[in-house]
Length: 390
Image 1 (cartoon, helix red, strand yellow):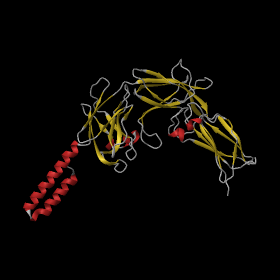
Image 2: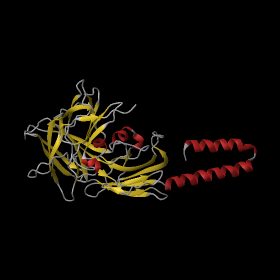
Image 3: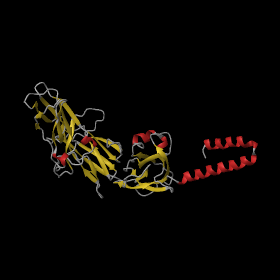
Image 4: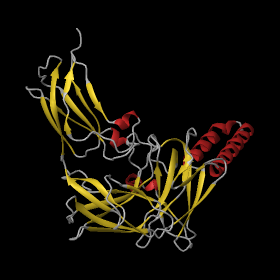
């Protein structure tokens, strides 16, 4: 029972001094209700977790962090590392206990009890392992469509404690080379590796854990050891907060495989794989040029028309948030001409628009359900706009 409960009982005792019989009955009732509530809280919405080492022995003294995946319940790795109340330490048997409540984490950030959300619990990687990741744990306000993911099935909190075991994994080696498209090895390029737990943010990002960085050597080689063996995401060049001069456009999965005209940055690890090679092809930014002229129906140039490119970062169907929300724009000059540069040649559409004119769009066939690999190639795209009747 907490201090507030004790103070409340003491207050009732003081008030009831004049009628000892009623006071004794009420005090007994309050104490009984408090004890029952405390016992009930100890039974329901509780996770009893256990962390094992690679060899199956208990992982004692291990720091376990919650990763909250839902809006209103987001908890990212960096945030959990800053909040001691959301950090759990295993005992000598590798066990830890987590309690869940009925509130949004954003509304109650200073409590050790976790609120409504879906979670993964993680143990950070050690020197000789890739860490541990639990199955998905659901403590939602309402149960939605979650059935689990590549990290495991979903288990829901309830009236009975939830038992979950997570084991540290030896991990795999991920390595490769970074080249330019002329085949030159690029030294000094930072490559980042992380795991994506699929947070429900509107940007599609935020659930990354275990982020690591490696810098290519004089031969353009990078290497990561003990990578958790489920799925990972690569970024290259990785320069947070800085302008990038190069863009990833080609990938080779294996030394003797063919280069693919695609940024393959999300990779699932197959069972039994111990080593993966991922070679990365970079090009300077702004290599792909789109130009043209915008005129009215009589052929006269139109100035200050907004020309917008919708840029995809991947050459595939099934675009993520960044692919479908990346744009760049310019305006036409006095002669109606424009030139606009893109970091990739995977353009979803080019649009010309100005107030008092009907906009016009050249569209990627994939936007209309076309086949994979079709995109708007760099080149000349002229627009003829029709004036809107006043």
